[in-house]
Length: 241
Image (spheres, rainbow, N blue to C red):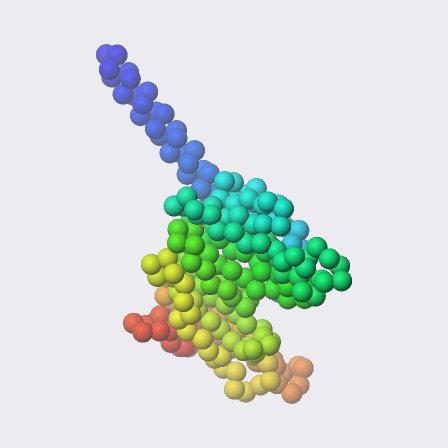
């Protein structure tokens, strides 16, 4: 009888621990989504100060996954190693501010195994996505949007000084990131074609909108389209299937 009671108690404790872990994971997901959403909005407005000031919340949410040591950002990878990003010395001197380069944690998305770090310059920003196992990184020229699994990353470039207006899809394979596809769909007809993510519910199908600004301010046709993953790359289509 005592053995039966002992087994029941062990089972109850195990279930309670599992429930607590699941609740913690859900809370982390929700908080990570909130942090990413706020940073994405700030990025779209070039509000670098908000991204800079939001790091304490990101560090708190990351728990033992990340820490700040003065001008160094420390990311604790799953194998037990540490990835370090250090601000430039120029950031300490007001007259050297144009040469300043800072790193700030945006979010640690534990369920996807990805850190997102803002690489902040004097008047612009890039974003680093980092695998929490290998430490492999990709430096993106605009804010990242993630597929359901986190193994694909969407980047929408708006008036980028190098690429102009474009859509990029990055892939993570074997814990390494690489650029898988880049293009400017429906951009032939106007000076500016901006892109917006509509939804990304399936790993291999991305729904987007392209808005073209032609000569007239009132003339802004919007084109809905899809990116489908093929065996070799991604294909632009007009239908979801």
